[in-house]
Amino acid sequence: MNDDLTSQYTIPNYRRYDFWPERGQGAYVWDRDGKKYLDFAGGVAVNPLGHCHPEVVAAVKGQVEKLIHVSNWFQIPQQGELAKVLVEEILQIPGKCFFGNSGAEANEGLIKLARRYGVLKTKADGSPRYEILTFTGSFHGRTFATMSATAQEKIHGGFGPLVPGFTYLPFNDVAALKAAVNENTVGILLEPVQGESGVNPATAEFLRAAAALRDEHDLVLLFDEIQCGLGRAGHTAGWRCIVPGDEIRPDGVSFAKSIGSGYALGAFWARDRSIGDAAGTSLSDILGAGSHGSTYGGSPLACVTALATLEVILRDKLPEHAQKMGAMIAETAGGWNLPALTAVRAFGFMIGFQLNVQRIEANEEFKASGQLASLWIAQKCLDAGLVSVPAGPKVIRWLAPLNTTEAEVAEGLEIFRGVLAAV
Ligand SMILES: *Cc1c(COP(=O)(O)O)cnc(C)c1O
Image (cartoon, rainbow, N blue to C red; front, side, top):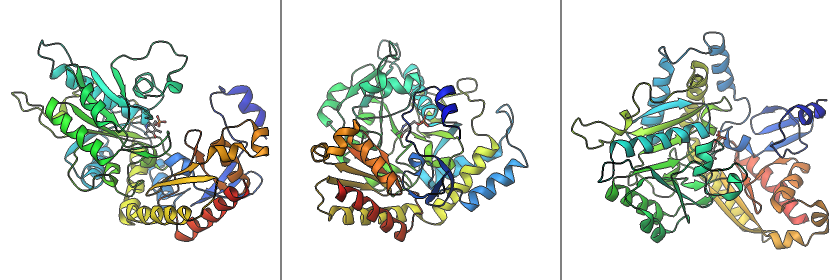
């Protein structure tokens, strides 16, 4: 088929598996040879309802025949409807939303929000505050600012000077966080559950310390919920899997991935919080007309797709279901006693299986493969009919659809156990 065209005509920036999915339904995909797989990669958290959910398909079809795109010069009522769901039902904290097209673009918006705040609420000498604290193991995107925000050298490599104004701190180190805040600091940006670096949660103590420092030093507290949000981690708001209820109130939250069931959409939310000026301006209003924008962002088609997706997530109580399934996976896999697996971290359907790399390195076939342990295991899973993704060199990650049934979970666990037992 087109194997050669991809390598000949597309930039070789992805390390792709020799896996050619052709169609999907729910938690299953079929490759071009007709082989069936259970898909627990879930498009890296992009498919919360699995492949081609009928209500999403119907919403797309209905809108595609009515109006696909209009400019943000004009009224797009679906943006208001979608923002209302994010504010009232997902976050349940008053605020306002902006719509773009990707996770990186959503985080760019949060970074601009923080920088703008630092221009309005300056240092004592009247110059802007601009420094944003970010954390080891984070991933915030591949644009210049979000790559610079990402505290991982392997993401920075080879592009010359980064965007200034980010300070990297060890994740979950409260003392280091307290010590780092200075007169230039304006914001703290973190993933409540880090995804790309291996499903690593913030501690409750760390989130509380960040919120307290925000209050004490007039900062903005920004949560990147692109991977852990929208029900993925077992709560509509991801950080509530760590500190439940209303105790922690971030000032900005970014969304993408699960929001659009695969239709490109990203969003950020800013809280209705007075910035303390004479006019009583709200943080959610400081990006005024002309300050930010996105040509494609929040098209009627994108918004309708997201509305259909979120409606099913909320109506079918999928966050609670994910919580239950995550607990079941952790319990089952935790009892396997397989030497290749050292730990399971499950937050709803955001699951990291920590591999025993030394054990895998002893395998002769692995030695010959020249691969990283997680990539090699992911290939073994593919061979066995299970799609998963690595998260760093030592972790296999499942981001299964939030509506994956108990029987499908049991099927996936059985395949995975077989793969791990064989190495
Ligand atoms: C995927 C991801 C991003 C980047 O999203 P893109 O849509 O690829 O730009 C940012 N932050 C987190 C936590 C992510 O998982």
